[in-house]
Length: 412
Figure 1 (tube, rainbow, N blue to C red):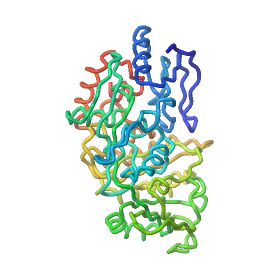
Figure 2 (figure 1 turned 90 degrees about the horizontal axis):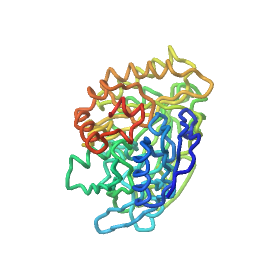
Figure 3 (figure 1 turned 135 degrees about the horizontal axis):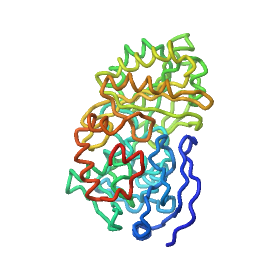
Figure 4 (figure 1 turned 45 degrees about the vertical axis):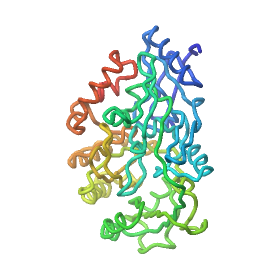
């Protein structure tokens, strides 16, 4: 297939954009390989745009920008092995619908389900659950179109290669398909309520240990919950406060029949995980070692109540188990994730930088698709296998075909 004239690309919230020289929308792995050969002939950098949900400059290129929106769909379902293979551009909600038909479920999900699977999984996206890994931890294999235009089939027999590729931010090659471990279908029982902050902190360990999924949003002012489209849980609140409160959520597997009320819901797993967001924010999110979770949110809460009082977007707080992926935010580290956001029309940069300073004190690592301030040395210091990853990346892509300035600084 030929190259098309490029143009402007923007991410979902509009804080990142690029103008590429060329673009293309391949429908098959063979077409992806053909496009990489053409990029080599023209000496073009190549990046892939998924659904555009990253807040960081991971997509941008002035060379060839690929979209995998036509390379999508569940390609195979192996119910006996509890594995599926999906094309790289498949949306997470498409996977959920197909799995339900086959009596299967994803082990965990985040709270957005319109992301492209290759981009979401390999940037470190996660859900919540103290015993559950991030989405990349379910990757059993993948097929990569490398910088030579050849296809590398990663099938899990070389665990180092698999763990390097699981969270690789598109820097090892173009992911044409992923093989994922899944599980038997299950329903989730979701319950919502409101606590004051100190009650939440007192129950923090208990709720994390006793529920498959637990997370909360801390809202500094009454208007905060509206910014993330959170429901009004005052009717099931343990406190009369409307400010400095935590909007709480637990989810547990259940055999009960489907139902839905204002603050409870029972339904198939992939119909419970996602919530609605209006793309009106720019988010920073770090994985904080679990033992520092409560201290980290206390410090950021104090920052928001005293120094940055115009920053009223909620803090989102979740749990994720450690995993072996080399560049995972959760590499061999059980963690909480703490995210903060800035809104349009507000100069939020100083706020995000102050949060970064606090969370660095706990040796926290960022979600690669969320705002952060890491440089080359930070990556080396925070990720024990960083230099191994860089060496592998150079062996697969010696000319840096799949890098841009942002990734060259971090992973080059």
